[in-house]
Image (cartoon, rainbow, N blue to C red):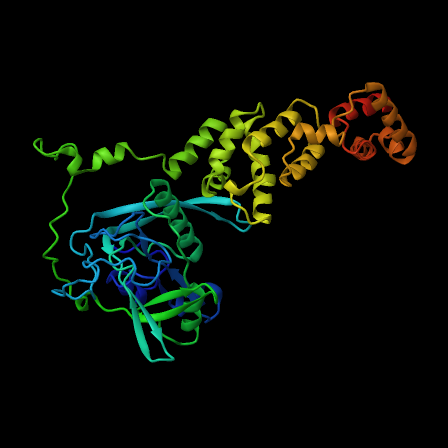
Length: 462
């Protein structure tokens, strides 16, 4: 079934309903309808995106042989007789796939993305999944143009892949990227796949269409160096795939609690209900729990879950501090995550541990340091010199001034040095008080408690 035809013209409906949009395709909205809306004959384009995601399974061996699965191994060093189809009864130039009986059909994937002019509004979307099937990866051809020869590396031949076929329900790169990112998180959470995925090529296809060209039904590869896609081969029609049953493979039967036979060894069959009971907390469930348990914003839950290791870091900090979780999340996103991005580091590579972060926030919460000093201490902790927050505060004498008389004297001096501001306040403009508070902070190098300073200044100026 095709996606809802909301804004697609009549000439595009057949392309959407005849099943040809199982890959990334673009459909042109008819120029006449566009001209009616904006008074011009300029063509408008609607992105219609359907994805086939091939995720390599996390396994130590290949799908049907004991050969190891290893990245960047020497060519043909991980090949068994079966992978090479020896002694040669059948050619190795074909893939085993679940074409007629995929392991799952008619599913869906819920995902969310930021929308709106400022991209500050989160919306939820759903893309249908046509099917999920297992298949073998194929060998790799290495073309040597200088010697006009092609070399074959069969290291990847037989590696297990999971192909996830999505319906063309998405309309732009942002939606597709958000859907793929959600899928990536699910696969990584389940341990099914490492989930290293790439994006695609909407602008290229628009350019082709705008110049009167035709989008070919083809397979394209992404070149990380150029940021472009490269044509690999024409995509054959379904009737040209020449599917045939694999005589050496028995059917894969999946049971649930109601259908599993009583006389079988439960460890030797696939029970989908048993697998479901053992599932870890999936990304969407984790986001809901974070929002309900800690009272954080939904957007913040997405930030935590989308960054590998950040949820665990956040929850460890919350457990070890008396600070409200909504304050902790502010520090995590605005300071901790920002420093990680600036230094191109992952959470596990952070020089600040959860316990060190908690100690810093506790000092701030108990009133031993000001928020501006806390920022300074955080920057010092980031240097990774092995000092604790308490040691940094003591060595640099950054603690809040505890001597009330001294603070009174500093406030009085600031008042005397700023007669113009004092005059405005006495005329009723109390907003200027913030300027005097800032001056006290400058004199004390941030070591004065803002609330205490504000109380002293108000009393002296009233």
